[in-house]
Length: 295
Image (cartoon, rainbow, N blue to C red; front, side):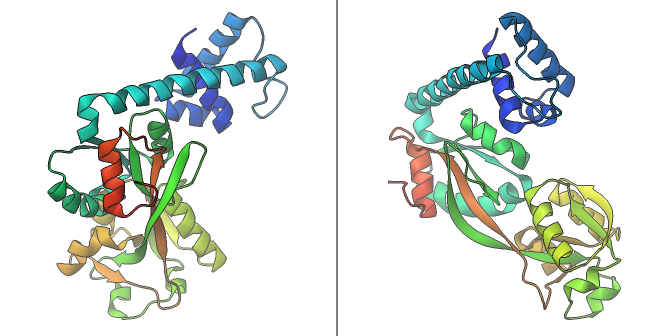
């Protein structure tokens, strides 16, 4: 029985799905199923109630989950503490970020921070939003600046700013001739959307649904640069964070419009584990952001 098997079992129970547990651990769903079978063979009892359509623990499974979680949490906490007391960690900042935030928003904060802290080495790991929380909890990253941060156990959310969302169009599109647009103008238009399930996509879908607006979803993409390229080539319209298209708008490579009847934005915040006294680079960066509790 290996630590990794215990971690996978914990993730399976806490996420409630084989697909999510597989994603968090960079595995296939069949590999997660095999890990579960190996654990049940090792303990000699079923850990999940197979009669239930959802993931439901047996009595043995509940005991096993509590113990496995305690072991994995202790190991992850030990790793984080060892990292924090190593000499190089005091001058190293590991940040997990989604591409649109890491490439545009994060650089704005880091530019001034590195001027005043030239000895700090910054590592940025671009990840899907769904993996970032787990990376921080497991000690793979110190913090993240992300959109729609959700507070969860052992992680704190520090609010930053609201980031404006705008409509981008190909420069020759008919709607570009109109200085003002309403949200209803998107009805029936070819639309390039963020991947289904991303926080920004969910928020945009919610607004469109509430207003009864139905664009034609032509593509679903997970990279802001790919979305901009698709719009520029005339494949459709898109709603994206304003900082990500400022340069293209200025050079007239993309047409940018705001809606006259609907202000769109997304909240940004810092997601971080409890900061220890030894985490000097993390504390310094939070202080640079003006985050409460960084002292």
